[in-house]
Image (cartoon, rainbow, N blue to C red; front, top):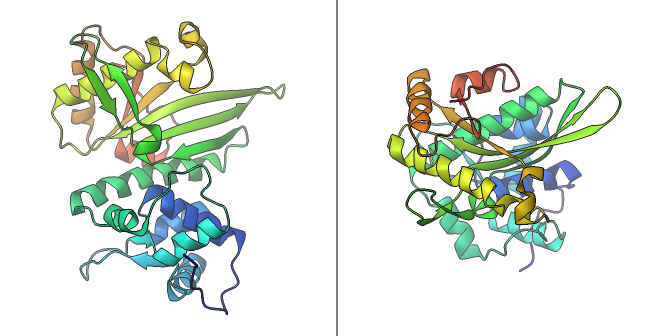
Length: 277
């Protein structure tokens, strides 16, 4: 499948990075694109997106007049990324699968845009912290999916995180530290028992050595491969109720999960906003 691009569009590396982001995240708004790929310059991002739309590389989800534009990767954009070898580490998608990824419910779109809001908040905050950098921020659930056995029932449960993040931090002596986090953005649509079950699966995944094996280690060396789970909630009440429920779990979940509200994360994701149960 060859891409069909207007000859007057001179593609830049930033364009390819944007198209790759759309492939990985499924959807984003122009504001997300501006923050992630245009240094926050919204007007410039708007003009560049217009060119990419005219070149049929970027499309838009059908929307009502009062709704913001939701961008998605067009067929020609997918073809271009394949031609340039940009998608080598991703699963192969055909056009029908790409279309199905775009045809999801409004509720799913709102959730995925909220995940992108969190991603943008971290990227924007990291830019002004010289000791911090984001080595990876993946928001494709299938890429981060794992199976864990619930510690109480023993049931095998497939967990599809909303995101996976690796932060790098430089110490004053130049030493580099890496911290890994899974991301869960709660939209207040699930019962507390489901959130507690998911948190228990993360704890089981860590203690069983599943994450260690994923990162090239052995199961008995699981302590050498720590991670935490960032749970983001719409309200402080929802956050506090989840913290209580995690304490009541068997075994109780004390430090594996960090909790904050959506507004706190969007304001200052690296601030002292994260609570342990």
